[in-house]
Amino acid sequence: MTEKESKVVAKKSELAQTSRSAKKSALEVEAKIKETRAEEIAKKKRDEAAKAAKAAAAESNAEVEAEVAEVEAPAVEETPVQE
Image (cartoon, rainbow, N blue to C red; front, side, top):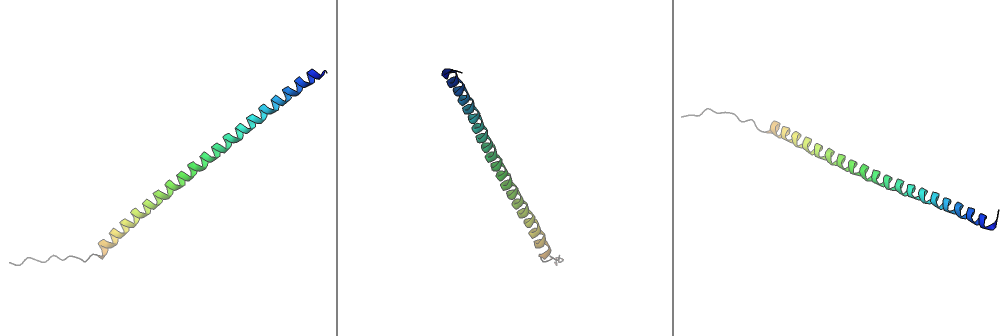
């Protein structure tokens, strides 16, 4: 193999390695982006679930308080009207 041919082969090898490295880097970046998005979505779903649970608990508490107030309210007796 001549010196020129070996330089060409070396350059081709270098370009192939660079291409593989670039593809690998792009895939790693894409994976990180997907992971970050998945984490954000999971956090959003957790926050929404916590908010819904809090709202449900507040509604339940309001219903219980209304029932307690109804039970604790003094009974109103009807008195006949005297004329």
